[in-house]
Image (tube, rainbow, N blue to C red; front, side):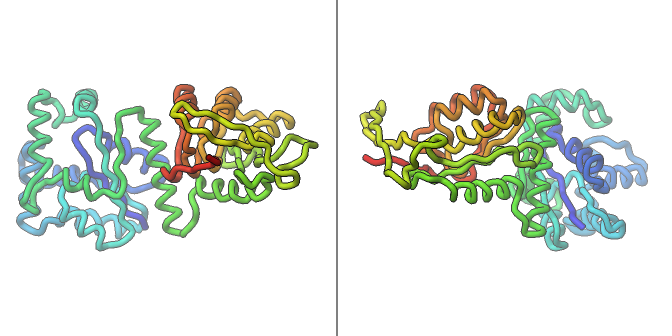
Amino acid sequence: MNIIGITGTLGAGKGTIVDYLIEKKGYVHYSVRAFIAEEIKRRGMEVNRDTLTLTANDLRASHSPSYIIEQLYNRAYSAGRDAVIESIRTPGEITALRAKGNFHLFAVDADRQLRYGRIHVRGSETDSVTFETFVANEEREMTSDDPNKQNLAECIRQADHVFHNNGSIEELNAEVEKVLEQIENEKYKRPSWDEYFMNMVDTVAERATCDRGRSGCVIVKDRQILVTGYVGSPRGLPHCDEVGHLFRKMIHEDGRVTEHCVRTVHAEQNAIAQAARRGIALDGSTLYCRMTPCRTCAMLIINCGIVRVVCQKKYHDAAESEQMLRTANVKLEYFSEEIQMYERQ
């Protein structure tokens, strides 16, 4: 059984993440806010932001800093299913849940003006406030030296995963899905899908025929391999491993002079060419490769409809192709920020 705790700022999107976990992943939902509201009504008081805060602080002071969370955890444990506990607000609650095992803390934040607009659309009984009151409420809950009182800033700092929800619901859900996959893979010691396909890049690269850059490429869609490619000479022409390199000098803007082998076709180019020969459409696919594609490869990637490029490392002279890909809305990601140098001075 997994327990996911949700913390974050007002109107940041905690409920959106909870909805995704319930609707798409079958999690059972337990709400700190709902638990406190039950107690407020039992005491015959009106539910508002002040009574929520005061009652929560009173319950923690009367029992323990983790009292509310312990009650919700017991309910979740009795159900025996994956559960999400919403609105964790004190470090003591985090400590208590971490002691149970299989606990992951998600935090969500967003631009303050954007969050204020969201709570007005939501329009719950605690949301009809001015912007000044919204800010004052948030500041009151962000920090405290009292373990029984809310300390959102510290909770966010302790989160295992922080989501910055300034975009669409679809973008937030995609980020949540990625983290859930990571959690599942860590649980069973399995590689992520990106790691899985990048491992294949290394295997494909073993077929390369130029020792200057034994690179490979794998193009994937819907977690299915469409085509692969590796560095080598055009079909029917001699390979570097057989006849040696064919070097050309390149003079850079900063005055550096480097030599590059021009006998071979890059792994990305060979993979795209293989797709063309076989009539395989690459629209919406992801390309995995060892380092940032060159300018020519970037242009081919853009034109054939690839939407995401994942690289092991960053190439030393990658600024132009990075800019091209991003301008064309091709998502570019790196496994490592290490700079890969392939040059002879």
